[in-house]
Image (tube, rainbow, N blue to C red; front, side, top):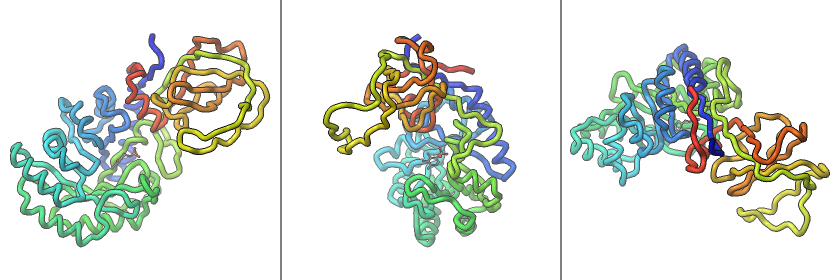
Length: 352
Ligand SMILES: *Cc1c(COP(=O)(O)O)cnc(C)c1O
């Protein structure tokens, strides 16, 4: 077996998807399963399908291309780039948009490929990321779209809690719904956000008519992103990263010598003095994971830090339990999973 490796528990993901899916269904909401965290790995996309999903969304068109063979409605959830219009029409059925120039280009390309392409217009509800701030401007674009015969207006969407971490609220959902009622179409898709909107949904704060959420984190880890709580009936340990100890020594907890700045130009805070302790160095680093979003399964292990290629931990339990060559498992969260999945140094194991 080669290390580091990432164990991917497809059964856990499938069950999380089923649980969140039925929770959303109770509130009249369909899910677009977001796949960007795992680069639309087809095994995991299949787990989404097995969990009952019919739509996926990814921010990268290259990821949607990987699942070209799967019959699903595919959404590009990042505003398309003009230079990628051809691929967008080819690999995505739906895209989220906020620029009229891009819509013109998508229309021309869709015509060329003899396709109809669906468009969701994005509303900026305050997070200051993508979307129209002014309603009139969005409605004007929606009306102009009547002349773009290869595009189909599909609905509106918003994204919150991603840049400014503005929380979704009943008022914001209400105004998104009202806006959708002014669109020149009958049954609009109204996409009310990401895993940060689940808490509001569970409080009953999402008005009828909001009928879609784009979910990634909640499906993979069972986590809603308002209070960062875990949803009942889900599990957070679908992704386990295992790394190998290459050095194990008793060392002082305080460094010695004059302290300079780190790679970001910041002077590091000095660690607490815990005296001499057992430290292990693992053959994995920032290229493969993110120490802020990973948790050792053994509670006697504490992550101390990482550089590009090393991860350093303190071992405080039974000193005989670990030796050079031992394998240490960690449960991964969002950004760690993203890096581990992207890293060619991490071997992937699928467990179903
Ligand atoms: C990443 C992303 C999502 C999914 O976010 P989660 O918090 O993982 O549910 C939804 N919508 C857009 C536009 C995104 O970029």
